[in-house]
Each structure stands twice: as structure tokens, then as C-alpha cells.
Image 1: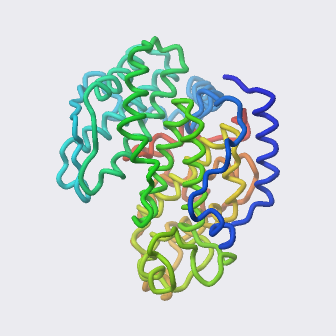
Image 2: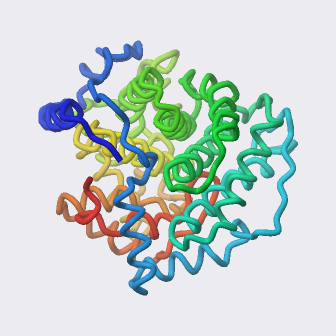
Image 3: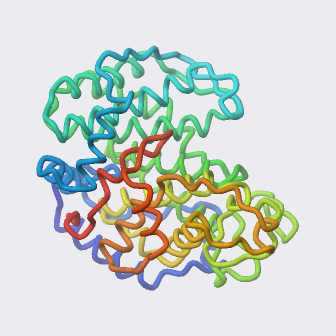
Length: 406
């Protein structure tokens, strides 16, 4: 792990600037064309540094080995999962063809399962030191890197985000944990991420439901760190800064939510895009009235990106603290059983938020001490978190923030 003096000074400066940053419509408009600021100033990337820093991984390992909760139960759950199988062989495809809702599914689940398996094995390797899991993680990644060339059909962009997230996290751990990963295989995987994933991810998904672009941004920033690609990292940051203020509402935005751009302008278009919701309150998501599953995906992806950025010295958390904490508490409140008012989504919510609050809660409550009572109730009720698509084992990796700062 390395930090330079330039990096430290930049981190401090960005933290100060974040305090005075604005979430206003005017600020969003100023960056609506996705202008990428000149190089953000960090001298080197921190490794490991995709979603988890080395200190986070070390703490998780120490807590598991000491039998502490919730790490012990989270690790046991992970070890028992099908993703941790050492006998499972994945069968990659050159063209992963994914239609709407993954119908047709020509390699879609094979790819996401293999990527999840690689990340799961990487975490087990880091905690246990068992080289069989290191070898298995590398096998999953290398087999796909030798074969895959493209993603096609309606879900191609989202599929690229789901799998890209997991590949980047797995690759980052394996590269920086003395796992015996050959340089030739590392370069194959890095090449796969550069050519098959990153170009699609960085195009964004302007008019799709917002969870798409947030998941894609999460994958893009992870791949950028793994590849030491500062230009792509900066562009992922710019995508996040455009999408987050257009996905979670604050009353300070004005009478309407911010537009993500494109044709989504004016009251009629924005209400339609927000699933027919015409009354806007703090913490509401563009997909709240669709269902809590997708709203939760957007929320967790937003905090994933902010977490990777934090490790690298960019305080996205601080820039959108009010927006993200209000979104967490708003959705947790109704997931915990609060009565749904008639004005909200026609008086009926499609619940099912999922295990999506650990990362944000770790930052805002554990590290910063911000009270998030509804989020705590939900996290305590649902721990340990599981694995699904691009969400994985977050009770293991993000349960105790104050000890995790670099």
C-alpha cells in the first residue's frame, strides 16, 4: 500500500471542498454535459482499493479469526455458498447475449456467477490463506479473459456492470495479496476489462432507470483503479456526480428532481420518469415507486462508488451526505413497516430493499457518527448480508468503520 505526500494533501483539500459543495440544480446544470475536471490530483492509487482497502480486509480477517460477530457469521455464510465451491467449472462464452430481464440468457448467469465466484474465492483466500481458493479465483477470471469478446442485446450495459463490478473486486484482491497470480494472466484480465467492459461502462445509460448507470459507474471506477487508469477514474467520478443528484431527491433541488439530461426535461417527462410520482420529498428515489429492489440497487451502487473514491482520496460521500443519508433512512423506514401514505406511489409500495445499507451505514454512522436509526434497525434484522448480482458479503467487509480508515 502506498501514499504520497501529494496524495495526502489532495485528500485533505477535497475533503474541505466537499463540505461546501452544493447539490443544487444550478450545480447539476453546470456539470450536465459530463465535463471531466482536470486530473484530480492523486499521485498514485491505493492498492488494494476497490471497495475495500487493505486495512478493511485485514480487519475482517482478524475479526473472523477471533470469532467476532458479525464477521464470523458472515464468513461462515460465504464459505457455505455455492459460489465458494472448489469443484465448480465455469464455461465462458465469446458473446454474452442478455435480453430484457436476461431473456434470452446466453451466458448471462454463467458470467455473473463466475465473477461472483471469483470475488468470493478471493475473499476466502484473503481471510483463510488457503491457496486453493486463490487458484480458483484466478481460474474463473483467466478462463473468461481468454474467451469473452462482447455483450449484446437489451441488457448488455447492465450485464457489463454486474459482472464488471465483481471482476474488478476479485482482480484487485488477487493482484495485491501475494496470491501467485502470473503476470501473463493479470495482463489478460486487465485487457479483458479494458476492451470488453470499460468502453461500454463509460458511455453511461442516460435515459435508462438510474440503477443502470450507478451500477455501471461502480464497475467503471473499480476497473479504473485495478488498471491504474486515472482518466477513466475521473470520468467515472463525473458520471457519479451527474447521476446521484438526479436519482435521489432533496427539497433543495426545487419543486422537481434534477434531470439526468437527454429528453427527460420538464414536469411531465420527469414525473413519468419517476414512475408517475408527482410529490417529491427528501430521500425519494427515481425508482422508489417502481420497487424497492431497484431503488436499493441504485443506493448501494452509489455508496460502492463513493467507498472506492474515499479509499483513493476523493470525498464523494461528503459531497452528497444529505442526499444519501436521507435516501437510506427514507427507504429503511418503509421497509421496517411504516404506514405508506396515500400520496406515495398511490399508497402502495413494492418492498424488498435487500442487503444494501451496510456500506453507507459504515461510512455515515460508524465513521462519522451520524444517527441513522431506521437503517440500523434494518441492518440488525437482516445481517449477515448475502450475495446477488453485484452485492456481496458486505457484513463481512463493511461492519466497523472507525478502525478502517487508512
